Length: 440
Image 1 (tube, rainbow, N blue to C red):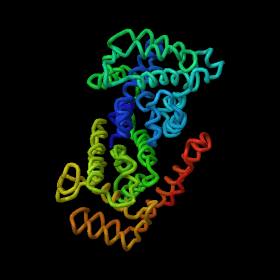
Image 2 (image 1 turned 120 degrees about the vertical axis):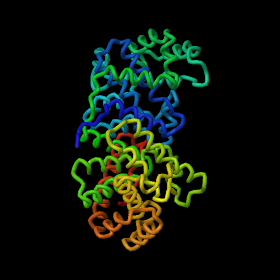
Image 3 (image 1 turned 30 degrees about the horizontal axis):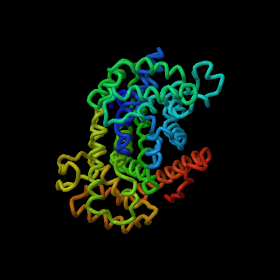
Image 4 (image 1 turned 180 degrees about the vertical axis):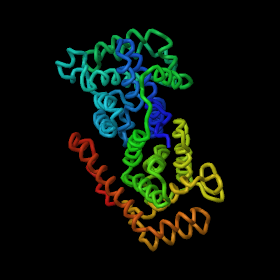
């Protein structure tokens, strides 16, 4: 199998940016606008191509650490009391993915005020450890918060400029404010922020950059970022994706899949619930049966998974493997109502992995099912033509092996979640919640 992925890092971040925007309606378009403005500010400052690319990429995902509703509402206020928490959380989520280490440093600094940057770095234009990129990103971010998207952008320019200039040297880096004073005078700067044009401009800037293509191992590592982004949204789902991915790989290994194909299955498992970022936390955490309107929201999440992944144009059908896990053989599933003959073996594996993990895992509001209870549920779903009979038989014959793989993955995910919460709580004891104490 060809291990080269026909996808560049910029394309992955555009996709991730789309997913982050879905976490709250007030964020729609925010990341693209901030990325666009930060790039223009860096260009006006005559930064290198690499520096401009890094600040553009950081802009696309700068609020990745805003996992709670309070975080997402707070970042859209100009005077933000809790901004540092989501900066550190974003850095934590990205820091181990080598191609994004520079981007992670910028995100970590993107709510530092200029007067808080160490004096020796201010004298050097803050050119160290992400501070300089963070200063430009901070300015672009706050400009966007000041924009009233219900009014003409050009007409708002004088008031926005007045507000920004008043904070130069205190909140904002003077050189960045001077760059803004130059670029704000050009009408195109504001007009290209229209949702009709901005995506094309960002892709144009990325096409001119030296952003490298991703190989299979890097795509897998990148998908792990999604795992934490999806699962850390709610303590009720904080280990689910890890369990699905491990279960799917265990099943595929028993079917004799080669290592590269196993890696693809793991990636699909990691990405299968991206669309749940569109689902409000109160629905995910409801301990009772969902009503019709609530379940209608749930029924849309795999549609969003499909479309987010389809934009990546990967050389395999990962977007279908990941997003068809609620389809059923008779076409009674959702959202596309595809039938058995349209479902690949990989999609059937992810479906079974999702069902098995959901019924076997512990949730804060109920324990996981016993082996006997799980067997009964799986058998009834085979009878109802909702699961593949051969795959269910393989799972039942190898129950201990597959369940052990699921448990080990979810225990590791629980530790990651607790470590993440511990890290934030140590830095921000008055803002971050302590670990939820999940039991795998």
